[in-house]
Each structure stands twice: as structure tokens, then as C-alpha cells.
Length: 114
Image (cartoon, rainbow, N blue to C red; front, side, top):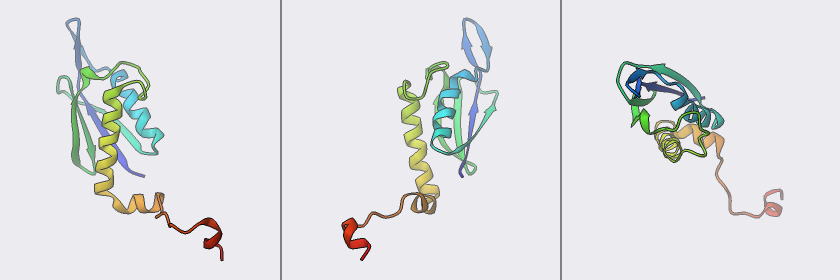
């Protein structure tokens, strides 16, 4: 299982600056549905979200453009982020995907069991 850390900063709305975990919950739920382990870590950087895998920064986005308490399928930016995270994991852990997705052979099913 791959550990993904999401560092998210406070967001300013109506003159109030505070951490809104609801902005990153959709992204975290999408990654958990893909069988990844996710940690949400608040930081002090305003409007910033950094995604880290194995100590490396993989993606940096602004938190204010993510939708609040919305499913990841409805949020276009969230879908793009999940796709980029998957590609980064394929670079870091190529053996992980070989186990999960075995190579497809071109033989028909009847010929494999002979």
C-alpha cells in the first residue's frame, strides 16, 4: 500500500483565514477508493496544497480551486490530480503495478488451459 501525504494550507473566505479540510476530502476519498493510504496534514502556507509520496513533492495546487465537500467524480481538478498522482506512483513503484495488473497474453482462453 502506498502512503500519500496531502499538506493543505488555510483558505481565505470572506476575510476569514482558516483550514478547511472539506476542500481536500474529495481528493482523499478518491485516493482511498484507489486503495491508497492517505494522510491529511495542515500547514501554515496560505491557499497551498502539496501532495507528497515517499518524501518527494509530486504535485502542488491551490486549495481554493477545489470544490468544498464535493465527490471527486464531480470535481474536474480533483480528477486531474488523481490521474497525475497515479502516474507518479507508476514511476516510483513500477513493481507495485506489475503485481496488481499482470501482463495480458494474446492467447485465447481455450489455448491457455491446454
